[in-house]
Each structure stands twice: as structure tokens, then as C-alpha cells.
Image 1 (cartoon, rainbow, N blue to C red):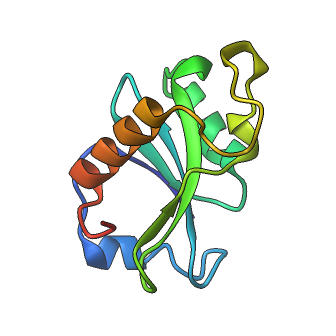
Image 2 (image 1 turned 135 degrees about the horizontal axis):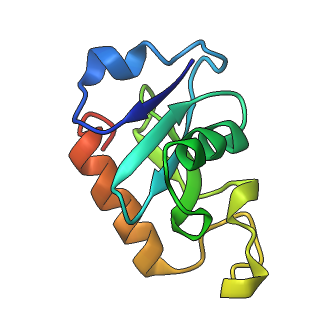
Amino acid sequence: MLKLIKNKIGEKEIEEFLGHPFSDMIKFVVDLKREIIALGGELHSDGEALLLEDGSKQQDLWGGNFYPKKEKKIEYSSLINIRPSVENNSLEVQDIFVQEKMKDIISKLLPEVL
């Protein structure tokens, strides 16, 4: 299950992603400029492709995972985050500003996550 989220969704809609394919985790890719999210899928690259097809630009996309059932934890980790050109040399988003912007967008569109 993979979907573009452009408007706020609730807990029930978020829970529909569980089990498709992961039972406790949901992958996401955030477009920092457009403030939308690709939610779900098996790989972050799936969400990345969906956003690119919808008009997003690669440099604005960052990925992560969240666990809505356990501790409502967000991980800012994804293969698509490896970007030596902006000094992000790991899976983790290293720029605190980028993490905060991701968190702001998630809190607006997926308020039940935080």
C-alpha cells in the first residue's frame, strides 16, 4: 500500500498501512518544499518515485520510518538520504533543520503519529 498524503489523515487511515507490508512500521518520504508525504510501500524508493511522478524534486525528498503502535517513534533513516553532495553521508538525516521540517510536516498531515 502506497499513497500520497496531501491532507491530514487520522489514526484509522494510518493504521490501514500496517501489515502492508510491515506489521509495526510504516515507511514515509517527505517533500520538504511541497509539504506532502508518500506513505507506505516496501522501499523508500517506491515513495520517492511516486513523489517524483507527482512533480517533486529529488533534492526536496527525505525518507524515514515511524512506528505508530509502539512508542510513536520516528526514525530519520533511509537509503535515499545518502547524499554526499549535501554532506549527508549516512542513512540518517544529519541536518537537524531537515529533521525538524520533516517532523513539522508529519505533525500537520499525520498528527496521530506524534
